[in-house]
Image (cartoon, rainbow, N blue to C red):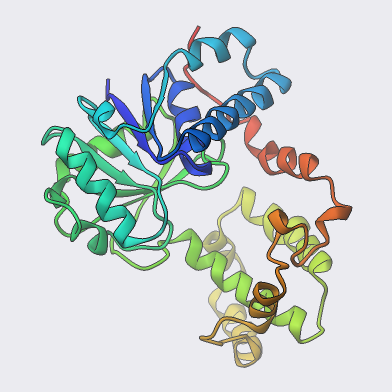
Length: 310
């Protein structure tokens, strides 16, 4: 069994740790501050409380899982770890510092799996002494619940390393893995998401629809349709001729800006930056954030198939 470490005690790190201890792995989480590590422990505990509330785990499962968890600010605790998820800021300087700390204490067989959502494997491979041991394993929030992981090698990643990463993710961690054949910024899902975000913000700015109506359209048409059949399965069902005719009518009016849109820059200037600020595209003071948290996880509760510790 792989010996797992997580470098990073933020939201992604806490969720990766929840997933790993929830499947019986002794897991070491490295953070940078005592308050950050305490927030991480609390977040992991809350993740377990959500599962218990849904009848998907017991208090004993939680207690047994938490016994598998080590939280520390000392990278030396990663010595002997064979598979490390890196979940720190999207900053090459920060990541290089983390990689140096990992490589200083870990063996040559240790796999370093970055959770980056936008940096390329080539850029990350340039930061390490052993690029053949590095892959991207990009999860999606909430990372312990949403089963998809994008696995991306660099040109220097050893095939055996890729196989080991895929075996861990698809095996005991029960993830759905998509393997990218080529390194691209934003990987796969975030490229699709950014196209939808860009068009959605454009439609709001053009006065075509509100955020509420766009979300309603996505939840009740786009989301439900592509949850049961694939996007490109649907394309094939419609057929190339009709899709060509639709594209000819729609493509000319689609948003194609290469700049950050005004609705975002205005929000940054005013401090209305999203949920944490209480205001973004929505007024979150009028929404139930706890209900939103559960709604965000709800589609994945039925897919939970962990090797729960007893």
